[in-house]
Image (cartoon, rainbow, N blue to C red; front, side, top):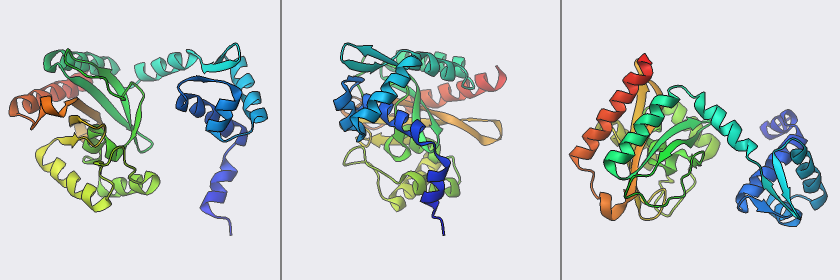
Length: 257
């Protein structure tokens, strides 16, 4: 009898999967590399990688610089198009910018896609510190405050489906990787109205996130404020109230825009 894995393989086009593996490998090695380096990262033969690089190059997805290859700015064009077409994109951008200016911290707007948390917008405040979270970064939902805030708005059945698909991988040694611990934390998030991570996403970084919902409880993402643990400490009521107020304004602006 065919297994689920067999059925999944039957639905995939191997050539497309290989091209995606080549693109992922380029990202893994920093965006540029030679055929051998890319082959090692993708765990593919050099001949196969070379063919796929040339095919991607013909479509302007890859740029060749001497003997090395890099991802092209065509990906930026596609990413910009996708983000600009996201519901409420303009309102989200303006609110995230204002929140970064007012809090002086890094501010993120995170959405869920295919069971992963994706950074849709990111702004750096005056006292913001460098983080590995760039626009488009994908986290497992249990690794980021925004992802946890979104999960808390989902029914348990949907949370379980995401865990079944992706598991609960760690980003740091403090990341919640136990299902029961996560489910208990989601109950606390529902009670207090915000999610908080302290070193779970990045060592030394604390984040506070509030879900963004539209009428009829449609969850569209989460706003998160992040900064060094020694600067943020326990969330004070002023910051929480500001975050809630700005989130509520954003919800209204998107609803009536």
